Image (tube, rainbow, N blue to C red; front, side, top):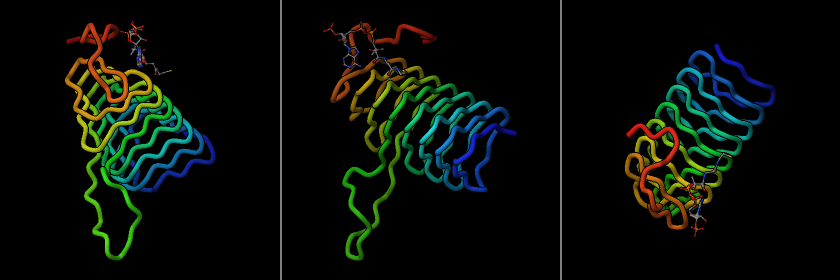
Length: 164
Ligand SMILES: CC(C)(COP(=O)(O)OP(=O)(O)OC[C@H]1O[C@@H](n2cnc3c(N)ncnc32)[C@H](O)[C@@H]1OP(=O)(O)O)[C@@H](O)C(=O)NCCC(=O)NCCS
């Protein structure tokens, strides 16, 4: 059982838990799993096989490449872009297909508006990534990072909802 609005494109294999909401103009590809109470804002792209944990929220214009794994109660601000290919090219006969390497975001992590997360990056539980950051290295659990490239901020731990 889930709520949705018109003009979205949800593949028939998508699994939605109780209480999910999917806003208009979002695309959810095959084999996506949304646990209970996930919210997908408008104009999001959720690639094949992504898994979003309970209560996680994507604000508008989030891009998740195939097989991105996001834990429970994560917040991804508007325009967050996750990437999975370090040297992107278009498909060509003489160029080998890339091996997708999406990021992983652990439970209760918060990602600020407009953040770009590079391929294969691991964001730890309760981490906080400041708006506009480009995340080029793994972020430890509970760490607070910002900037391009993202660096740890003074104070180290996030200041709200900190349970570590
Ligand atoms: C990172 C963040 C949590 C602030 O953490 P904070 O510990 O309260 O930091 P402060 O506001 O005290 O700022 C500390 C320093 O970091 C800088 N800073 C703060 N946020 C920054 C960011 N996103 N990128 C770069 N620098 C940042 C400040 O300018 C300040 O620098 P200064 O001391 O030279 O003036 C916050 O700025 C942020 O980006 N939150 C996410 C907002 C968001 O995207 N929400 C999405 C839903 S709308």
